[in-house]
Image 1 (tube, rainbow over the protein chains, first blue to last red):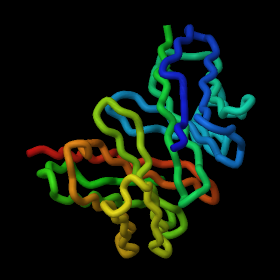
Image 2 (tube, rainbow over the protein chains, first blue to last red):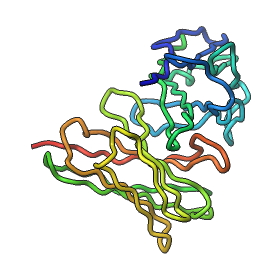
Image 3 (cartoon, rainbow over the protein chains, first blue to last red):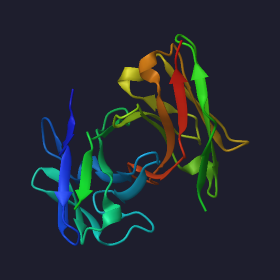
Image 4 (cartoon, each protein chain N blue to C red):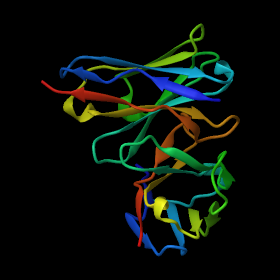
Length: 111
Length: 119
């Protein structure tokens, strides 16, 4: 069974840049997987940041950007702020039976 | 403005079934797929399945096959997710999420429904 992998944790300084990745246990991520990214703070519903690799959802600031880096999808936070401290999840479309698979999630700390 | 409003928290016994609803407003209900996603306490997010509110077709994650049913009521713009044969491991917050039009992923989320399975 394919696993979607993310860094368990990531620490970034205020004003710094964080690049989170989303990979496959076997194979490469490409735009055909239509990677998307979600932010979640404890006790809250997820918030959509990016879909279709690099399209920002409505209202999302442009310091969040999505891309493909090598064989992984990536979410870059530029100019990190204290309220970016959250869990971040990627989702990949697997192409069979409409299956969407969540990544394992990354806990981002801003300090 | 798009809203997805879910039904309230449920407590169920092991072996029972639960049916969670998600009422949509602020857009044309029949042209956006709706997904169900769950999150067990302290765990990550897990995709459960998808329904096309227009025609009613569904697709479920393999691990829920045989235990999950998604339906819709176009007269009230509501989708339902029923999970049967509940066990303690089904204790989770269940979310509905609207699919991105013409693409994959999700663009709007419901507020979540806590389902607790306990004897």
